[in-house]
Image (tube, rainbow, N blue to C red):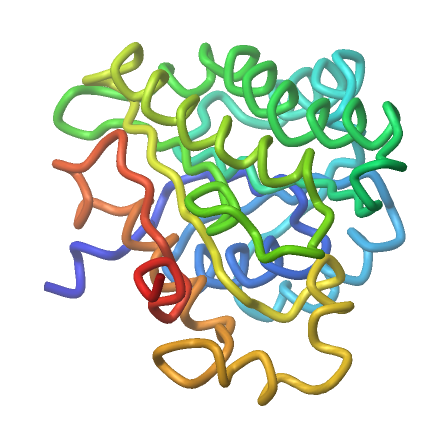
Length: 257
């Protein structure tokens, strides 16, 4: 049974891997036996992450801005110079923007959609040769997209993250579309996180995690193990009959309405 969840000999790329949920995901993949590459815009974040994660396994980093086609090309070319195949792509890089509806700027739409939607599609497209290099119907490659519960249900009034929620709903549909297109050699699924400690949710946790946890059916916010566990499941042989799924990892928040 343990072998179902092992990733020994697999190569994984985690975008947005320098902190937050990406760091949690990378740690889980390393502990399951994968070699992991992290990608992020900020080299300083990557350096800290590599230093923290190196105790768990082989980890390296490539700096690239995945909100641009040039950044996608930089990451793809550099990874291709280092590896002959990619077994797991985790599209986790994300951006958000908050402003009242009447003041929401065009830049807050463009930036968020460029990273959260365009970047996911362009990077997946660019990495198809590496993903297909060792993929078979019996041992498919994996694409795992990070969505959000804000893409499953409308955020509460006053959240003001209009382009973010729209982008995550788009990620969920893109996941389903790609799953049908790329089967059977590549499985494509999405994780829809709820409240996890990260830079993106810092403003929601200013009064402490207990206040947020009061609105979660399971009574707590997410932990690193929660994120690592679902990602390892989707990356491993344990999920070999699942594609096109969007899995809420939210303590039950998305079922509470």
